Length: 267
Image (tube, rainbow, N blue to C red; front, side, top):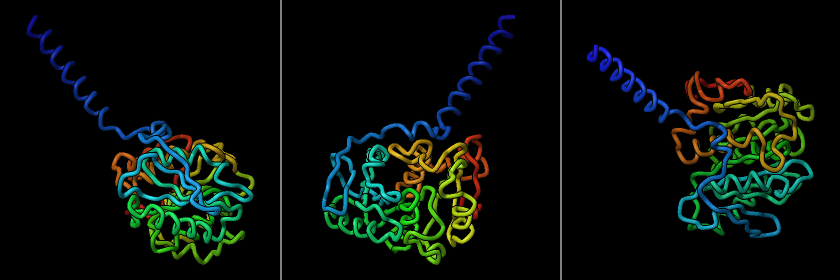
């Protein structure tokens, strides 16, 4: 009787240990990546055309994220999100322009950052992002050979400086973000065409219930996944990669995201 009870207890203990061990290796939840990173941050205005959000204490080889604002907006409209990205170890180059669609002001800001922080940044780990017209600018800037990935939020397919021919001249993978309730830049008409035209791997995620103004200030529901994308692409973070890679990727299995991929061999 005692031996039988001992066997049951040992089996239960072993099962619990295995379960706990399994829990330890689960990918980070999106909510965790929406939390603040390990770095305190500061903001530098290195010129009239470029604002930098960065870790207060800089080391070496920080990746760079180049940001483009929506029409009529400035970096202040997205300041909470840009500080958040900096808090995860990135140097954010935010162009002080209200018309970022051509991507030119974004690249000019990037050039200033590469010069100002030459000892602290890695010129081979650069990504672009932006909202609306700035998302289009992120695609345009993505054609620059120094940029290796992009994460545009609700970009337009054409107009406001965007050259549609640039969409098939990208240099690396893209995380394309849409909002299902976006009535300003319709997801199917705009992001759908970008997804179809892109000649690079694209992970297209549509956040259910999100309007066109989801990215304002702190990036809302885009905040955690966008952070994960840059951790994955620019820092090689294997846990962050699990949000995107595989048929059972974290975002693939969430009810609040609808996911499409154009290259399942990559993702």
